[in-house]
Image (tube, helix red, strand yellow):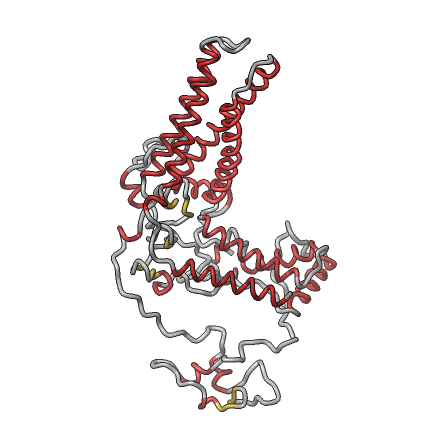
Amino acid sequence: MTEICRVIEEAKYNAREQRAAKSKPQPWIVLKLMVFITIGIMGYAAYVYIGRFCLEMIKGERIGVSEGTGIALLVVFCLLFLWMVWAYALVVLISPGFARDHVPQCPPPIPPPPARPSYVSNSASRNGTSSYSNGNHHPGHFQGRPYEQMPSAPNGYDQEDWNAGVMNTFSRPGIPELPLSLPPLHESTFKPHDHKSNAKLHNDLRRAAEKHVTRRPPTTPVLAPEYRFCSKCMLIKPYRAHHCRVCGTCVLKYDHHCPWIGQCVGARNHKFFMNFNLATAIFTSYTFSTLIAYTVRSTNNNEDLDPQQIILIALSGLFLLFTAPLLIYHTHLITHSLTTVEAMHQQAIKDREDHVLADVFGLWEIRSKRRVKAYWDEIWGRIDREGNMWWTGRGEGGKMQAWEETMGSTKRTTENPWGWLSWVLPVRLSRKEEARMGLEYELNPRFDAEGRWRRRREWPVELR
């Protein structure tokens, strides 16, 4: 079993490396193939609904259905169809925003030499003391070797400071480090004066610490220039930009590559992507419900069924099941200041925590897992809120602020002369507002300048 898992993991990483090695974008015809297919499906839907459904009613070929009903169904269908086609045209034609149009090319930045960890004590390193020792260790030595035999420090670094903490930052195996006192816990989750609840929490934390299980947010300085440099485009990417292997370029506020529109969803067409999903969800629900209702009525009247209408019912139902959840999911992402890529990163952290907690607690110990996660939230904050690098605020006000950054303001302004109608209709914002999108983002103050999530005690005082 172990060998099988090893082979699967190796194949997964090999496939990932092969995808990363692809530098050439896909041919234009491959990129736009689904666009032509989508246009064909739209045209087919219009042909069947208008030519084989509404016109039959207008001509009086359906029993018990008046001409006025057919005209009314036709008018509503045409309005919804034009709304959907309008939104689709804009989301296909408007660029998501490319980093190359705003950032000049440059050579790879030289990363600074690694700094001495802030948690290593100067006095301890100079005295040769350590919190980790064994039979072969004594002051001034590391694994039996004198410090003078350790690698020389880079220019500008003190040799003793450079050697300090090579191993003394790790706790002794088998002896977990537990906090002497628990931080204050929120009353809505715990009862601070309930000694029984606190005892259960401390026992859960002790079990987790025995297996060295804790929350470990990534420590990579993802906002540092050397980490934001794209070796394919040869530029330093703006915040939230990512390189799309399919398009072969860096996209501003990259969300995902959508084959249905033949390009990426990014900072400057995410709004139109939402407009299109909304229009399509309403259009397909209208088409599906009306065709179903009158098909059932025709069956009761012993009329022949049109196979073309049955196919359209299946297509409209299928796309309704696809676009409606997609609309809801992206509404959640936008209101939480997330993109699909960033949400996947957060989900990876949550999955890792679930995986390591499963090694500590049994399947039935759900409350213990919740208590440990709640305790970690007290120390770090919630992963999908305080742990979001681009989270704009708290409560409903923060969600509305995040929504307006993408979809436009609620009230009419010079940047958005349409007001809330821009949430529904695929109308463009002002040129100035569109030019700003994807280039300016405020960093969550719970992160440092290089994009590392800090503990609650390191946050600004007003946010703790």
